[in-house]
Length: 139
Ligand code: TYD
Image (cartoon, rainbow, N blue to C red; front, side):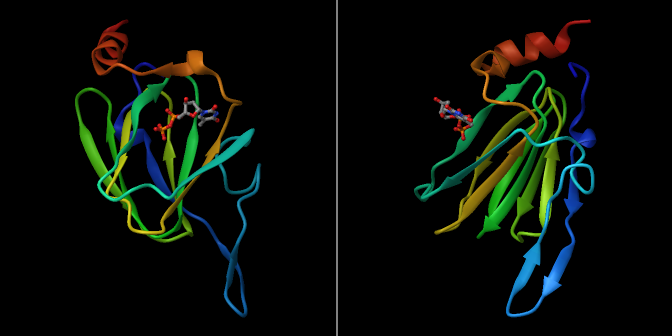
């Protein structure tokens, strides 16, 4: 996905399956997630003013959800930048491989839930922006 663009990333609306004494949303492989989930992790207690991310993935697909509170996801494909605010738990931002991302402006108590298409692999990360640009520039 060297050639992927920020426009390949999209916000997916997850269904509210059950409204009774609060809401219940289900994300299920093969139904409403565009990949099979092999890992889930979440960020929480992010201090005010702190940012996360600051890397790209070579192969990993992710669905990023504001399970609580809100934050911004800044996406870049090396040419175009898009900022997406996530603030409701029934929206998931699909981030395709080959996209630089930074997460910031976390509200107090927010939880960033990430569903990922692969197990953790440090070799899948590109952690330098210059390295990312060089990788994107390759044929
Ligand atoms: P990282 O993905 O760099 O976090 P962020 O982009 O939110 O700043 O991960 C932070 C650290 O946690 C890094 O040392 C790798 C480790 N980590 C795992 O061991 N397993 C995982 O599944 C993830 C996502 C991170």
